[in-house]
Length: 310
Length: 287
Image (tube, rainbow over all chains, first blue to last red; front, side):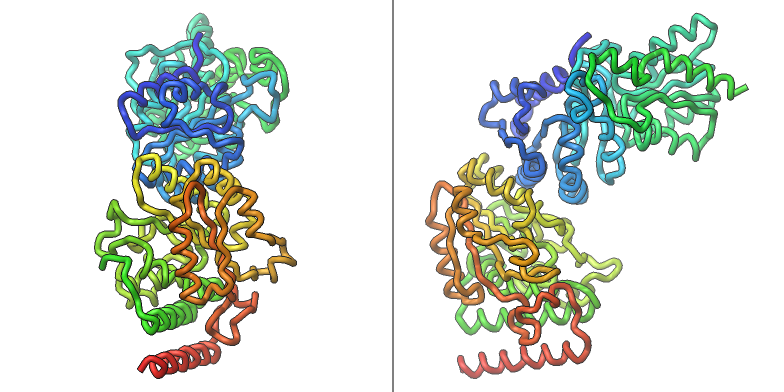
């Protein structure tokens, strides 16, 4: 178990060394998003922006217009929500080279409660033209996603979480923006997941294997641009689909997947995610269980999807 | 052409009249657009683009250029006119303003025409962009200056004040922001819609230098304000220019209704006639 935000912070440290144009901005949450590590090492390349996210985003936009590569960091609710129109009209319409780090994504934020549990970022970011949208699953993948983002000339949003999560990839796992990773090959059912739900999907697949069901698990770390080919090839093979995300179902990763599948190769589909409700305070694991975001629900939905296939 | 250049008084007046002619013609031809706030910023833009901004219309991305960031981006008739008249593109294309396929979008997109630094149209956002550019240039040890053009409407947005707070925090004395303070907005006088006065005290209390310009249509007063701003250190400077919305066209002056109204044929003819008379008077005065 490792922190995804540590992956974010370690990648920034690496970029600090390899790319002098990289600068970092935070909105009084540097200790929480771990950009404090970059601040300690590169104090002149770190800009405290105070609790003023709209200005932080467009200041980053202005910095990018002078040739710098700003990485902006705060909690996902604030970066994606408070400054949505700045991201839309300045960053995306202007195709500015700004990287947005949405920390503390998901209900697994825990005790801080609903106000701080970002569940909508993917829905509201993926409707924006020019945006690249990454939801890495673990420490290594987050680190690779941040390094990859620095190489993209344009807006990128990276979502990561607060808690330590299972490590399901390694330092050597290939990572390419826009190319989904098949974590486990299978022929009976496709499970598409992102973020923390990839580990849950792998657990569910293990359970299904005990019943003789061979599930394929796809880690959809890039929500946009979406890997149509990987999704379509998989469901053509398996004939049914479960999506799993720590996000609002409306407009989230599953919606993005279904926009592809419904048009290209419709198959019986079940979805695991947040069902049009806000979260609440509690321990992360308790919340994941209460809101139906564990391998148990994926398993149930898998059985339903398999039944519909027949 | 490389700027800044020095203009004679006659050239200044004639350039302002030319710009007002462009504004009226563009809005009339397009059947939509924003004449009022374009006309109020005319003398400020003629002065900046000709006599102060370091830029080269043949080399829009020149590293040494000063950066002009429009915060009140609805004044595209004024923006496109000045960019065309200083040589960024052919003024003959001004009549494509707001038409399908034209580079001259209703609100600007930063990629075209040449000479634009940033897209915009959503008030409150571009003071932050100007702040970011000024911060980035200063961080890189560059001496380019950043100019902004804001307005009382732009200063009703909370985002603007976040930027104003930050620019003082980072001691950005390479940033000079004009406020085209014409005091009228779509729904009426700003003090009845949402009061912003006293703007000078607000900027001062946010640790900015403030220069008040009594008449924002007086070239000498505008130049004096910029000259002074260029000497000020340690903090950004706001130049609050008292202007008249619709300036130069008698029936548009001080009328909130002309914020986004289009002159009909009769009004258009009348406006052009007034501008012809102004031009004739200037030519006569300086003959």
